Image 1 (cartoon, one colour):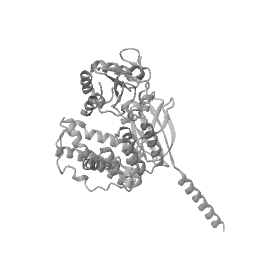
Image 2: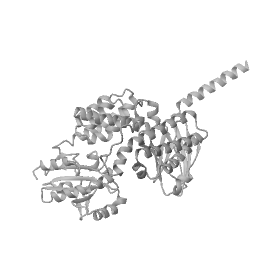
Image 3: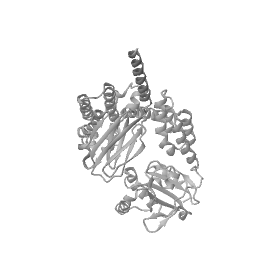
Image 4: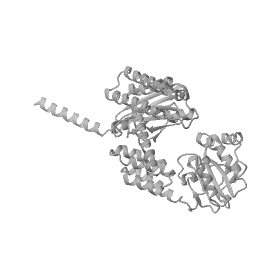
Length: 460
């Protein structure tokens, strides 16, 4: 009888423990960072690329927090140090390193420490095997592919020799390595053309044969592998370009239309959201773009965010009063507000000193300023650099001999003017009429011949 009672009691305890384990939907991350003055670090969800937590770093460099896990992969950012971490729910992970030499000192302990050490070692192996990116992409097709296969093999060898990694993770990671190889293969045409300064460059017809017949709706691979997600996005993008040409529609509309046909809701919702969170602010057909998104997205949180952006963007329609900026620092001296500039057309360039594409537009912008110098239009460049780069902004104005009105926004990306215009990426160009009303909230770039056509249609 005693044995029966003990057996029942033991079974009950096991049952209770199982129920508790089922409810664990969090992970614990802690650690110690030596030789840092940082007071904060941040955790990013690698699947959504959103920051999910700020970590407080104590005086002795220690930190600890509980993460409500929505994915298995995260990134820990402390100043310029970035550490990829694998923390599925139920994990307890400790990270320690010297901030002055993170890559050579980082150590992991606790749950999945072997996987996290592998991820850290993989960064080093990939970086050293890759070498100079420009040199790699300048290789001819055969040598480039051989170089990529060398990287792939090095990563696979590292994975296979790392002990204490589960077979499930190993199998998924082997596929991830392959997808990353395919994704990089897909970049060759664009990058080779860029580095060789031959924008007309085309890869040979069979160069991407390895990308044919890949299942684009594998949910497990989509969640686990960033490389797979890139392959899927590129495949849809390629088809969208063909559809846009065939049906004479914009590329962004074509992309949403094709994405909407994906049957897997998890994949479809993420791709729709990833396209719309920036695309909705750039599209030239807001109503059609939003209609396709809202009809096909079933993620309520995503829908709420994009709908909020859509409602704000409707207020930026042609003829609507422009949002205003007030008392922005003027490089020439004093401050300038938008209301000070009424009476002329205004072509606004939103930029920053760290933005390569912004700097690439400077020669075209200077040419336009010269051509329209005596016309009824003012060219205004608004820097959204952070205050720490204020001197760099001044130096670049001199070094690049920047013309027009040079202004410095009051709070970089979080400036009200920037937020009111729903600016998510730069460079961004805005055209405003002499009464302060919007002509185009997303005007063509200086290097785009459509801008000249637009300016020629105005009474300047």
